[in-house]
Image (cartoon, rainbow, N blue to C red; front, side):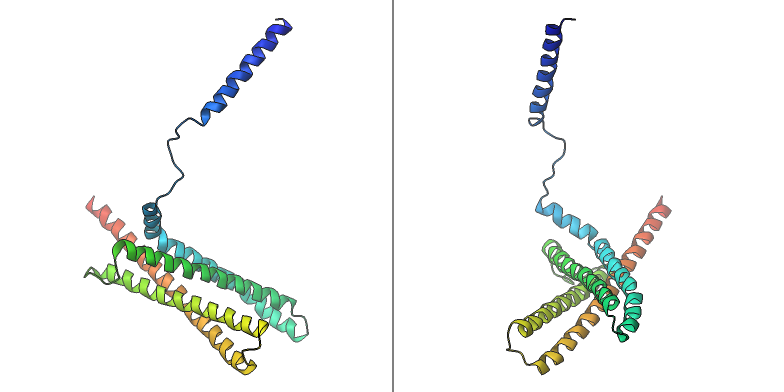
Length: 215
């Protein structure tokens, strides 16, 4: 094969590849990455309890990891070394951040559920539906209290840091109260999520068992 023939073959091959690549943009793919509002709502309504459970498990897991670090850091802080205790507090803050995501997700899923199905307890239904509505209302209330406490804590710290409008005695009285409300609301939120998830799991297993018996 001559050099000119080989060059012509290579040029023709390059032309075919280039024209093939340019035609890819004109192809219609069998799937789409666009999601409609109804699809997003359906996803939230279908998977909300399991996403909430995952965030709750992550929060509890983080705090379990932080507990021995804080205990050990407390003893080292007596001797003047607070670095370990600081690490433990950072891990605790990460756990509260996970609870914050849980609270936001719970409120968003509740709003979407109300938009899709109406207000809770709006219709007389079975016991499972009433239990679901009650759990959802309790989760929404505790999530709102938790987020309001975080917002109040940030506002009080900001006022103390940037201005002198807040007296120190008032700050010392408000901040512990907000921390207590944060702890109580986070505990109630996590407990409600776990109870709701356990109930949903039991109902799922029960429905599967009934379906298997019917077959």
